[in-house]
Amino acid sequence: MMKEALTRLIAESLEKLGLSDIEGYKVEVPPEGFGDFSTNVAFFAAKRMRLVPKKAAETIAGELVSDSRIERVSVDGPGFINIVLAQEAFSAVIANLLDSHRFWRISEPGSRMKIQLEFASVNPTGPFTVGHGRQAVIGDVLARVLEARGFRVEKEMYINDAGRQIDLLGESVKIRYEQIHDRRIELEDRHYQGGYLVEMAEDLVREFGDRYLGRDDEETRTFFRDYVLGRMIEGMRASMAALSVDFDNFFSERSLVDSGAVDKVLDTLRKKNLVEERDNAVWFKVSRFENESDKVLVRSDGTFTYFMTDIAYHLNKYERGFDRVIDIWGADHLGHIPRMRAAMKALDLPKDFFHVMVHQYVNLKKGSDIVKMSTRRGEFYTLNELVDMVGTDAARYFFAMFDPDTHMLFDVDLARTRSAENPVFYVQYAHARISSIFRNAEEKGVSTKNLNNADFFLLKSEDERKLIRDVASFGETLERTSRDYKINRITNFLEEVANEFHVFYNKHKVVDVHNKKVSAARLALCMVVKNLLADGLSVLGVSAPDTM
RNA sequence: GCGCCCGUGGCUCAACGGAUAGAGCAUCGGACUUCUAAUCCGAGGGUUGCAGGUUCGAUUCCUGCCGGGCGCACCA
Image 1 (cartoon, rainbow, N blue to C red):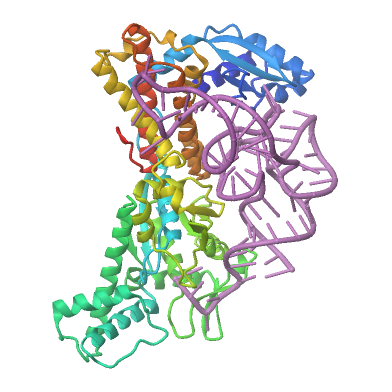
Image 2 (image 1 turned 30 degrees about the vertical axis):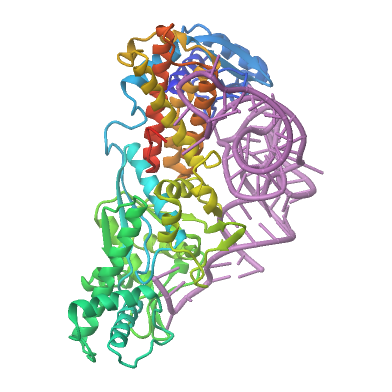
């Protein structure tokens, strides 16, 4: 919010110099010791002004000094304009932050487009893996970020309940059910082996006894299939809830098949002459749109591929009125992107409608072991086990802490450490510390009320100015995150603010019964930082405790 | 082989084309009769995988190598 005002001032100066069409320059926080803000505008204007950057900078700087909110302007290095803001500017900001601590929210909800986030979509055939946890947190945090920035957001999980694997899942439980009744039937390789299916079978025996024993009719198969599906979805919902992730909607793949939506899309593609029959299967001409080979939509046995139903699914999303969908997929779905893009083009959906965010895998480190998470090898911790070990806050924070593009190493021991090394506690501790300051103030009879009447001109140390400046920039961090989806910006930001607060705390006494004026001003600053930390943590879905 | 992502101190990670590449862990040394020492201060540790190119300026953009992950199914 400070930067916006300054950017406007710079634009005005350019206008006065007849350079209003210069663009592409930046206003940013310079390295330590170069003032509050800095701009590289002179590098862009130099050519037009027929000056070397340094001279151009001096000319522009000359225009800037006339504003009362600017204390000092200097030109350093090859042509950077460095600006020190007047204390007045800081006072205005802190008053503003006290008034509306949710300044980083775009106030009219839904002022931007309507976005759907789809994530944690899986075959409901086994428990969530640690990788799904990363995906769920990325999705959930991104949803909170986008919502804060004025988008209407819906979170959806797609349930792949249509394929053969669900029938097999039902069969597997049926076999377990028979086994409990001492029937000599064994699972085959194609069946699911997981122990959780035995538990379900036991529940079925408890509830239904031998009602389905020895039966193999359509009704029985449907019963087992739907029962398992219900239980699996229930389990997935619980796993997500343990991570504080909830969804606005669960969407069934099967429903697309049953409603005829899939047939309809296939028909559309057929009419556009974008499919062909080959080897008894139906192929979509991906190669018409992308540099990729054609893909099967309908197998030679007449069943739909995942690709086919996914096309119908995305058309359905469009018909539901979303301006944009963001699918969050693991790196193993990379190959799916070009063909989906091709399908979107084939259906003439808007160019900007379909977004995919790909994230890399998660490896776990426990003790000195690095455990590669691989569903194929079957050697993994489940998401539930991980959350049980480290807790919701640490799990969410750690998953959010890494650039989604990079492979992350989840250090389990670090995450469960309730001490200094753990970045979650570092940030939370700053919040708890501030709460403690307020308790202390009240005990000592230093007023914590009417802080907006305090004299903010007293907050003039470099530590205090830095805190104010950074707190005020949270909106910018969120805005950038809403554009590039790199949610680790939020944890970086919070760690920086927490660090600045700890530095401030160690140097400056807040509550001082002998100097109530300074106390009031510093309490105001503490309040602003506390609100920011609480809000920032809430964007991550992590708690902000008052005591630790 | 082709495509996408990633290579940054011993380890895990940051860095909007900008100034002296930053944190944390680990190592070493300091700071609690004072609002929570779960904190802070300081030291050492780097040719940002390699080689070119574009630019006033490159960890960032481009090209080519090297290394790792993933993908290139009538799997999802």
